[in-house]
Length: 231
Ligand code: GRF
Image (cartoon, rainbow, N blue to C red):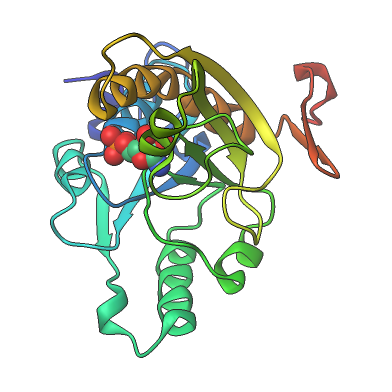
């Protein structure tokens, strides 16, 4: 049984090592469309002792997303909100917003969620939605960032973890990491190395947001020192 599971089964005792209970943890909702390796990195980070965060919902836009299975295995609530079940994009957006809001998240994390979120969703969680994108933005926005970077012939690409605003792949940058393109790379191999960097940076960004340490000043996001955060 992992540490978080132990807390769960011992609700009166809280966490034996920290004395904290799950009620103190910041709540994270994650949206996925596919494989969910970034979700797994988040689940693992949240399960670490003293993480201060708990993944409370994993929502997908399609029932076959393997991320849903990862959530079930971790004992996390899941939801499927399908665009096809709604008359238009704004209606889908509202349904997704309401389902996510019902989970009362402190942070909303897009981990390979392949839909554009509309204004109703984004405005419901201001400066609390974080996304990871597999390029060094503003280069190679869109759904085929790794393929596009290879086709362009760049020598270096990477990943960008950023806050989500109402434009696509656009909000203030939290972290970027460069990943060199190697001879013989194909899309899968390069994407694999990019994902390895995302698996480090996305959980870190979620944790900093959960701790209230992200300050947004125009296009810039600054990480505040722990002492700057009011207790
Ligand atoms: C990640 O590379 C992310 O940047 C992009 O989609 C990929 C999702 O991978 N938006 P996974 O589903 O987390 O494995």
